[in-house]
Image (cartoon, rainbow, N blue to C red; front, side):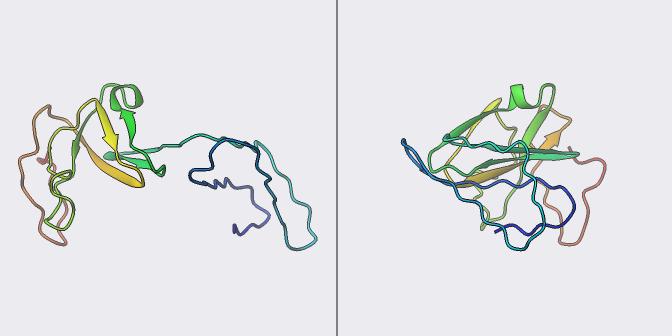
Length: 138
């Protein structure tokens, strides 16, 4: 369900493992006001979502199978490092290391990355709760 009003907006819906074949799609609207749809597209393919932010990026794999992300192609000229997770935040994946140019993300998982100005592993310093990183952090 998506709530709508008079302002245009983007909406995405993802259905996993639909397989081959034909499918019927129904769209139901409540109320009597006119509704306009544009750029309505349907793909029967696995999807990957990428978000770039000022200080990092997120890679999301909503599919059920492992997907590869080419960081060199997605973010030319940028070096990323993995976050440094606590013992409860998958420390094997979130080890603070520099991310390779191509990363694989298991199905229904995501990876948060931090932009790095240095081509060296993260120093391993942890932030204290409630403190912001200093300008000297990579």
